[in-house]
Length: 431
Image 1 (cartoon, helix red, strand yellow):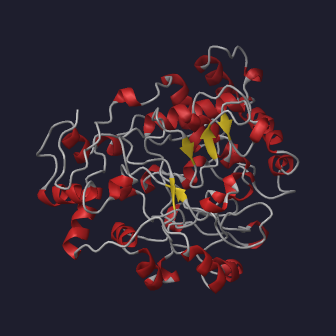
Image 2 (spheres, rainbow, N blue to C red; image 1 turned 90 degrees about the horizontal axis):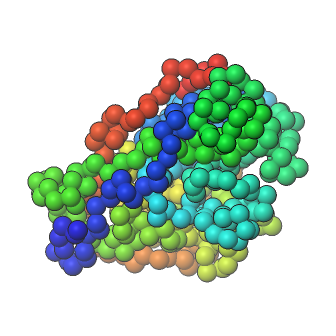
Protein backbone atom coordinates (compact mmCIF):
# COMPACT_ATOMS: atom_id res chain seq x y z
CA UNK A 1 0.00 0.00 0.00
CA UNK A 2 1.21 3.50 -0.82
CA UNK A 3 -0.67 6.32 0.83
CA UNK A 4 0.00 9.08 -1.65
CA UNK A 5 2.21 10.62 -4.25
CA UNK A 6 3.60 13.91 -2.86
CA UNK A 7 3.29 17.13 -4.75
CA UNK A 8 6.53 16.62 -6.67
CA UNK A 9 5.90 13.06 -7.73
CA UNK A 10 7.96 10.53 -5.72
CA UNK A 11 5.87 7.68 -4.37
CA UNK A 12 5.92 7.05 -0.63
CA UNK A 13 7.29 3.75 0.67
CA UNK A 14 5.08 0.97 1.93
CA UNK A 15 4.57 0.91 5.72
CA UNK A 16 7.20 -0.80 7.84
CA UNK A 17 5.61 -3.73 9.69
CA UNK A 18 6.67 -6.54 12.07
CA UNK A 19 7.03 -8.83 9.05
CA UNK A 20 9.95 -6.69 7.89
CA UNK A 21 12.05 -7.74 10.89
CA UNK A 22 13.92 -10.90 11.80
CA UNK A 23 12.14 -12.87 14.52
CA UNK A 24 14.45 -13.36 17.51
CA UNK A 25 14.06 -15.62 20.53
CA UNK A 26 12.66 -13.74 23.55
CA UNK A 27 14.72 -15.69 26.08
CA UNK A 28 17.91 -14.92 24.16
CA UNK A 29 16.88 -11.26 24.00
CA UNK A 30 16.43 -11.15 27.78
CA UNK A 31 19.95 -12.59 28.17
CA UNK A 32 21.25 -10.07 25.65
CA UNK A 33 19.83 -7.24 27.72
CA UNK A 34 22.12 -8.17 30.61
CA UNK A 35 25.14 -8.55 28.34
CA UNK A 36 24.51 -5.20 26.65
CA UNK A 37 24.73 -3.36 29.97
CA UNK A 38 27.48 -5.53 31.50
CA UNK A 39 31.04 -4.20 31.48
CA UNK A 40 32.38 -7.75 31.64
CA UNK A 41 32.71 -7.66 27.83
CA UNK A 42 35.36 -4.91 27.90
CA UNK A 43 39.03 -5.63 28.31
CA UNK A 44 39.39 -3.67 31.55
CA UNK A 45 35.81 -4.36 32.72
CA UNK A 46 35.02 -0.63 32.70
CA UNK A 47 32.83 -0.02 29.64
CA UNK A 48 29.70 -1.68 28.29
CA UNK A 49 27.93 -1.56 24.93
CA UNK A 50 25.42 0.74 26.63
CA UNK A 51 28.11 3.25 27.57
CA UNK A 52 28.23 4.55 23.99
CA UNK A 53 24.74 3.42 22.94
CA UNK A 54 22.51 4.43 25.79
CA UNK A 55 18.71 4.64 25.53
CA UNK A 56 18.63 7.87 27.55
CA UNK A 57 20.82 9.35 24.79
CA UNK A 58 18.83 8.11 21.82
CA UNK A 59 20.92 4.88 21.70
CA UNK A 60 24.01 6.98 21.04
CA UNK A 61 26.23 9.12 23.28
CA UNK A 62 25.45 12.71 22.14
CA UNK A 63 29.13 13.28 21.35
CA UNK A 64 30.63 13.98 17.94
CA UNK A 65 33.38 11.42 18.47
CA UNK A 66 33.02 8.98 21.32
CA UNK A 67 35.24 8.42 24.33
CA UNK A 68 35.88 4.74 24.78
CA UNK A 69 38.43 2.87 26.85
CA UNK A 70 39.91 5.10 29.56
CA UNK A 71 36.98 7.50 29.78
CA UNK A 72 34.61 8.03 32.66
CA UNK A 73 30.94 8.96 32.86
CA UNK A 74 28.09 8.89 30.38
CA UNK A 75 27.14 10.96 27.34
CA UNK A 76 27.96 14.70 27.28
CA UNK A 77 29.34 14.40 30.82
CA UNK A 78 31.82 11.68 29.85
CA UNK A 79 35.41 12.73 30.47
CA UNK A 80 38.58 11.42 28.80
CA UNK A 81 40.19 10.26 32.02
CA UNK A 82 43.42 11.18 33.74
CA UNK A 83 46.92 9.88 34.25
CA UNK A 84 48.09 6.65 32.68
CA UNK A 85 44.56 5.36 32.13
CA UNK A 86 43.35 8.39 30.13
CA UNK A 87 42.21 7.84 26.54
CA UNK A 88 44.94 7.47 23.95
CA UNK A 89 42.70 8.38 21.01
CA UNK A 90 39.16 9.54 20.30
CA UNK A 91 36.83 7.07 18.59
CA UNK A 92 37.18 8.04 14.91
CA UNK A 93 33.47 8.01 14.10
CA UNK A 94 30.18 9.10 15.64
CA UNK A 95 28.33 6.42 17.62
CA UNK A 96 25.31 5.56 15.44
CA UNK A 97 21.82 4.93 16.80
CA UNK A 98 20.60 1.35 17.12
CA UNK A 99 17.07 1.72 15.76
CA UNK A 100 15.67 -1.02 13.50
CA UNK A 101 18.94 -2.91 13.07
CA UNK A 102 17.00 -6.18 12.97
CA UNK A 103 15.34 -5.34 9.65
CA UNK A 104 15.51 -8.18 7.14
CA UNK A 105 16.59 -5.99 4.23
CA UNK A 106 19.57 -4.52 6.07
CA UNK A 107 22.74 -5.83 4.44
CA UNK A 108 25.52 -3.38 5.39
CA UNK A 109 26.69 -1.84 8.67
CA UNK A 110 29.24 0.70 9.93
CA UNK A 111 29.70 4.17 8.45
CA UNK A 112 32.20 2.78 5.94
CA UNK A 113 30.35 -0.47 5.23
CA UNK A 114 33.18 -2.66 6.45
CA UNK A 115 30.66 -5.30 7.51
CA UNK A 116 28.21 -6.69 4.97
CA UNK A 117 26.38 -9.86 4.06
CA UNK A 118 28.58 -11.50 1.42
CA UNK A 119 30.38 -14.71 0.51
CA UNK A 120 33.77 -13.01 0.34
CA UNK A 121 35.34 -15.25 3.00
CA UNK A 122 32.89 -18.18 2.78
CA UNK A 123 31.43 -17.47 6.21
CA UNK A 124 28.49 -15.32 5.14
CA UNK A 125 30.09 -11.92 5.73
CA UNK A 126 32.67 -9.51 4.43
CA UNK A 127 34.18 -8.26 7.67
CA UNK A 128 37.38 -6.99 9.29
CA UNK A 129 37.88 -10.50 10.69
CA UNK A 130 37.97 -11.91 7.16
CA UNK A 131 38.28 -15.73 7.24
CA UNK A 132 38.67 -15.77 11.03
CA UNK A 133 35.05 -14.80 11.67
CA UNK A 134 33.29 -17.85 13.16
CA UNK A 135 30.12 -19.42 11.78
CA UNK A 136 26.72 -19.48 13.44
CA UNK A 137 25.65 -15.84 13.73
CA UNK A 138 21.89 -15.35 13.65
CA UNK A 139 22.06 -12.02 11.79
CA UNK A 140 24.19 -9.22 10.43
CA UNK A 141 23.67 -7.45 13.76
CA UNK A 142 25.16 -10.40 15.63
CA UNK A 143 28.26 -10.37 13.45
CA UNK A 144 28.61 -6.64 14.17
CA UNK A 145 28.51 -7.23 17.92
CA UNK A 146 31.88 -8.99 18.01
CA UNK A 147 33.88 -6.02 16.71
CA UNK A 148 33.51 -3.25 19.33
CA UNK A 149 34.77 -5.67 22.00
CA UNK A 150 37.96 -6.19 20.00
CA UNK A 151 38.56 -2.51 19.17
CA UNK A 152 41.47 -1.13 21.20
CA UNK A 153 40.07 2.36 21.76
CA UNK A 154 36.42 1.29 22.10
CA UNK A 155 36.22 -1.62 24.56
CA UNK A 156 39.33 -3.80 24.42
CA UNK A 157 41.90 -1.50 25.99
CA UNK A 158 45.56 -0.95 25.27
CA UNK A 159 48.34 -3.56 24.95
CA UNK A 160 49.69 -4.84 28.29
CA UNK A 161 46.56 -3.61 30.14
CA UNK A 162 44.63 -6.89 29.95
CA UNK A 163 44.63 -10.30 28.33
CA UNK A 164 41.98 -9.34 25.77
CA UNK A 165 44.00 -6.44 24.36
CA UNK A 166 47.10 -8.57 24.27
CA UNK A 167 45.38 -11.36 22.38
CA UNK A 168 43.98 -8.98 19.75
CA UNK A 169 47.44 -7.74 18.85
CA UNK A 170 48.31 -11.30 17.87
CA UNK A 171 45.10 -11.98 15.91
CA UNK A 172 41.57 -10.64 16.28
CA UNK A 173 39.89 -14.01 16.89
CA UNK A 174 42.20 -14.83 19.80
CA UNK A 175 40.25 -12.45 22.05
CA UNK A 176 36.80 -13.95 21.62
CA UNK A 177 37.44 -17.19 23.56
CA UNK A 178 38.80 -15.12 26.46
CA UNK A 179 35.65 -13.00 26.61
CA UNK A 180 33.38 -16.03 26.24
CA UNK A 181 35.08 -17.75 29.16
CA UNK A 182 34.77 -14.61 31.30
CA UNK A 183 31.02 -14.66 30.76
CA UNK A 184 30.22 -18.36 31.00
CA UNK A 185 32.08 -18.96 34.28
CA UNK A 186 29.70 -16.55 36.02
CA UNK A 187 27.09 -19.01 37.38
CA UNK A 188 24.04 -16.91 36.51
CA UNK A 189 25.19 -16.41 32.94
CA UNK A 190 25.95 -20.11 32.62
CA UNK A 191 22.42 -21.02 33.65
CA UNK A 192 20.88 -18.43 31.36
CA UNK A 193 22.79 -19.62 28.30
CA UNK A 194 21.80 -23.24 28.90
CA UNK A 195 18.17 -22.18 29.22
CA UNK A 196 18.16 -19.85 26.19
CA UNK A 197 20.02 -21.94 23.59
CA UNK A 198 18.83 -25.43 22.67
CA UNK A 199 22.28 -26.58 21.56
CA UNK A 200 23.97 -25.47 24.81
CA UNK A 201 23.88 -28.24 27.45
CA UNK A 202 26.55 -26.86 29.75
CA UNK A 203 28.21 -23.45 30.21
CA UNK A 204 31.52 -24.67 28.82
CA UNK A 205 29.93 -24.77 25.35
CA UNK A 206 29.23 -21.02 25.25
CA UNK A 207 31.27 -19.15 22.64
CA UNK A 208 31.37 -15.59 21.36
CA UNK A 209 28.75 -16.63 18.79
CA UNK A 210 26.08 -17.26 21.43
CA UNK A 211 27.02 -14.02 23.19
CA UNK A 212 26.70 -12.08 19.93
CA UNK A 213 23.42 -13.79 19.03
CA UNK A 214 21.95 -12.82 22.41
CA UNK A 215 23.16 -9.23 22.00
CA UNK A 216 21.58 -9.07 18.55
CA UNK A 217 18.30 -10.54 19.79
CA UNK A 218 18.11 -7.88 22.49
CA UNK A 219 19.04 -4.88 20.33
CA UNK A 220 16.73 -5.88 17.49
CA UNK A 221 13.83 -6.42 19.89
CA UNK A 222 14.43 -3.43 22.16
CA UNK A 223 14.88 -0.77 19.50
CA UNK A 224 12.37 -1.78 16.84
CA UNK A 225 10.52 1.41 15.99
CA UNK A 226 7.83 2.06 13.39
CA UNK A 227 5.10 3.84 15.36
CA UNK A 228 6.00 7.44 14.53
CA UNK A 229 3.49 9.96 13.13
CA UNK A 230 5.02 9.28 9.70
CA UNK A 231 4.39 5.56 10.11
CA UNK A 232 0.80 6.20 11.10
CA UNK A 233 0.45 8.42 8.04
CA UNK A 234 1.80 5.65 5.81
CA UNK A 235 -0.71 3.28 7.38
CA UNK A 236 -3.56 5.53 6.25
CA UNK A 237 -4.04 8.09 9.04
CA UNK A 238 -3.94 11.38 7.13
CA UNK A 239 -4.33 13.33 10.38
CA UNK A 240 -1.08 11.90 11.86
CA UNK A 241 0.99 14.74 10.39
CA UNK A 242 0.44 18.43 11.04
CA UNK A 243 0.55 20.89 8.13
CA UNK A 244 4.26 21.72 8.53
CA UNK A 245 5.16 18.05 8.54
CA UNK A 246 3.08 17.39 5.45
CA UNK A 247 4.82 20.22 3.63
CA UNK A 248 8.14 18.76 4.78
CA UNK A 249 7.10 15.34 3.51
CA UNK A 250 6.33 16.82 0.10
CA UNK A 251 9.77 18.43 0.06
CA UNK A 252 11.51 15.25 1.25
CA UNK A 253 9.93 13.12 -1.48
CA UNK A 254 9.90 15.91 -4.05
CA UNK A 255 11.76 19.16 -4.59
CA UNK A 256 14.47 18.60 -1.93
CA UNK A 257 15.35 15.17 -3.33
CA UNK A 258 16.05 13.62 0.08
CA UNK A 259 14.36 10.34 -0.90
CA UNK A 260 16.87 9.74 -3.70
CA UNK A 261 19.21 8.42 -0.97
CA UNK A 262 16.91 8.06 2.04
CA UNK A 263 14.77 5.61 0.14
CA UNK A 264 12.48 2.69 0.85
CA UNK A 265 10.96 1.43 4.06
CA UNK A 266 14.15 1.99 6.07
CA UNK A 267 14.73 5.49 4.63
CA UNK A 268 18.18 4.48 3.42
CA UNK A 269 19.53 3.15 0.13
CA UNK A 270 22.37 1.51 2.12
CA UNK A 271 24.79 3.01 -0.39
CA UNK A 272 27.68 5.44 0.02
CA UNK A 273 27.76 9.13 -0.77
CA UNK A 274 30.26 11.99 -0.44
CA UNK A 275 28.66 14.96 1.33
CA UNK A 276 31.76 16.98 2.12
CA UNK A 277 31.15 17.09 5.86
CA UNK A 278 33.66 19.10 7.92
CA UNK A 279 36.52 16.70 8.73
CA UNK A 280 38.17 16.40 12.13
CA UNK A 281 39.41 13.80 14.58
CA UNK A 282 41.77 10.88 13.98
CA UNK A 283 39.70 9.50 11.10
CA UNK A 284 39.94 6.05 9.53
CA UNK A 285 41.97 5.38 6.43
CA UNK A 286 43.77 2.54 4.67
CA UNK A 287 46.23 0.49 6.70
CA UNK A 288 49.24 1.76 4.76
CA UNK A 289 48.11 5.40 4.68
CA UNK A 290 50.09 7.52 7.21
CA UNK A 291 47.82 10.57 6.88
CA UNK A 292 45.28 11.77 9.42
CA UNK A 293 42.04 11.70 7.44
CA UNK A 294 38.88 9.69 6.93
CA UNK A 295 38.51 8.18 3.48
CA UNK A 296 35.15 6.48 4.12
CA UNK A 297 34.33 3.33 2.19
CA UNK A 298 37.59 3.58 0.25
CA UNK A 299 39.24 2.25 3.39
CA UNK A 300 37.27 -0.95 2.84
CA UNK A 301 37.23 -1.15 -0.97
CA UNK A 302 40.62 0.46 -1.72
CA UNK A 303 39.05 2.06 -4.80
CA UNK A 304 39.73 5.72 -5.48
CA UNK A 305 36.17 6.31 -6.71
CA UNK A 306 34.92 5.42 -3.22
CA UNK A 307 36.94 8.11 -1.46
CA UNK A 308 35.17 10.16 1.23
CA UNK A 309 31.87 8.34 0.75
CA UNK A 310 29.86 7.16 3.76
CA UNK A 311 26.79 4.98 4.19
CA UNK A 312 23.35 6.60 4.11
CA UNK A 313 21.89 6.36 7.64
CA UNK A 314 18.36 5.23 8.36
CA UNK A 315 16.24 8.10 9.68
CA UNK A 316 13.62 6.84 12.11
CA UNK A 317 14.19 8.56 15.46
CA UNK A 318 16.79 10.84 13.87
CA UNK A 319 15.57 13.61 16.17
CA UNK A 320 17.00 11.63 19.10
CA UNK A 321 20.42 10.84 17.68
CA UNK A 322 22.28 14.18 17.48
CA UNK A 323 24.95 15.16 16.58
CA UNK A 324 24.75 14.31 12.88
CA UNK A 325 27.06 13.00 10.21
CA UNK A 326 29.61 10.17 10.28
CA UNK A 327 31.70 12.31 12.65
CA UNK A 328 28.92 14.23 14.38
CA UNK A 329 29.88 17.51 12.75
CA UNK A 330 26.47 19.15 13.13
CA UNK A 331 24.72 19.43 16.50
CA UNK A 332 21.25 20.15 15.04
CA UNK A 333 18.90 18.77 12.42
CA UNK A 334 18.73 22.18 10.78
CA UNK A 335 22.51 22.22 10.44
CA UNK A 336 22.75 18.86 8.70
CA UNK A 337 19.78 19.70 6.45
CA UNK A 338 21.39 22.96 5.40
CA UNK A 339 24.65 21.15 4.70
CA UNK A 340 22.84 18.83 2.29
CA UNK A 341 21.45 21.90 0.51
CA UNK A 342 24.78 23.75 0.26
CA UNK A 343 27.73 21.51 1.21
CA UNK A 344 30.55 23.83 0.22
CA UNK A 345 28.85 26.93 1.61
CA UNK A 346 28.20 25.26 4.95
CA UNK A 347 31.73 23.82 5.00
CA UNK A 348 33.14 27.34 4.66
CA UNK A 349 31.01 28.55 7.58
CA UNK A 350 31.62 25.61 9.91
CA UNK A 351 33.84 26.17 12.93
CA UNK A 352 35.54 23.61 15.19
CA UNK A 353 33.53 24.87 18.16
CA UNK A 354 30.49 23.12 16.65
CA UNK A 355 32.02 19.69 17.35
CA UNK A 356 31.03 18.07 20.63
CA UNK A 357 34.45 16.93 21.82
CA UNK A 358 35.12 16.70 25.56
CA UNK A 359 38.38 18.49 26.22
CA UNK A 360 41.51 16.39 26.05
CA UNK A 361 44.50 18.72 25.83
CA UNK A 362 46.90 15.93 24.89
CA UNK A 363 44.84 15.26 21.75
CA UNK A 364 44.28 18.86 20.68
CA UNK A 365 47.19 18.79 18.23
CA UNK A 366 45.49 16.08 16.19
CA UNK A 367 41.79 16.93 16.66
CA UNK A 368 41.73 19.43 13.78
CA UNK A 369 44.91 18.66 11.90
CA UNK A 370 42.94 17.56 8.82
CA UNK A 371 40.75 20.68 9.02
CA UNK A 372 43.89 22.79 8.77
CA UNK A 373 45.47 20.71 5.99
CA UNK A 374 44.79 22.75 2.83
CA UNK A 375 45.91 19.99 0.47
CA UNK A 376 43.72 17.35 2.06
CA UNK A 377 40.77 19.71 2.15
CA UNK A 378 41.30 20.34 -1.58
CA UNK A 379 41.34 16.59 -2.25
CA UNK A 380 38.11 16.12 -0.35
CA UNK A 381 36.49 19.03 -2.21
CA UNK A 382 36.73 17.08 -5.46
CA UNK A 383 34.26 14.49 -4.16
CA UNK A 384 30.64 15.62 -3.97
CA UNK A 385 27.55 13.54 -4.65
CA UNK A 386 25.05 16.29 -3.88
CA UNK A 387 24.49 19.51 -5.75
CA UNK A 388 23.46 22.80 -4.13
CA UNK A 389 19.73 23.46 -3.89
CA UNK A 390 18.05 26.66 -2.77
CA UNK A 391 15.21 26.36 -0.26
CA UNK A 392 13.63 29.12 1.77
CA UNK A 393 14.02 29.26 5.55
CA UNK A 394 10.39 28.20 5.81
CA UNK A 395 11.02 25.15 3.63
CA UNK A 396 14.03 24.19 5.74
CA UNK A 397 11.84 24.50 8.82
CA UNK A 398 9.23 22.26 7.20
CA UNK A 399 11.85 19.62 6.38
CA UNK A 400 13.03 19.63 9.99
CA UNK A 401 9.42 19.30 11.15
CA UNK A 402 9.01 16.25 8.92
CA UNK A 403 12.21 14.68 10.28
CA UNK A 404 10.80 15.10 13.78
CA UNK A 405 7.68 13.27 12.61
CA UNK A 406 9.92 10.19 12.26
CA UNK A 407 10.27 9.93 16.05
CA UNK A 408 8.64 6.87 17.54
CA UNK A 409 6.12 7.03 20.36
CA UNK A 410 5.58 3.94 22.54
CA UNK A 411 8.60 2.24 20.95
CA UNK A 412 10.77 5.01 22.40
CA UNK A 413 9.11 5.60 25.76
CA UNK A 414 8.22 2.00 26.65
CA UNK A 415 10.78 -0.45 25.20
CA UNK A 416 10.27 -4.15 25.97
CA UNK A 417 13.17 -4.53 28.42
CA UNK A 418 14.61 -1.23 29.64
CA UNK A 419 17.76 -0.84 31.74
CA UNK A 420 18.48 -3.63 34.24
CA UNK A 421 19.07 -2.74 37.88
CA UNK A 422 21.99 -5.15 38.10
CA UNK A 423 23.98 -7.52 35.87
CA UNK A 424 25.36 -11.00 36.71
CA UNK A 425 28.98 -9.83 36.87
CA UNK A 426 28.14 -7.43 39.68
CA UNK A 427 29.83 -4.59 37.83
CA UNK A 428 28.11 -1.16 37.91
CA UNK A 429 25.42 -0.44 35.33
CA UNK A 430 25.43 2.87 33.42
CA UNK A 431 22.01 4.32 34.12
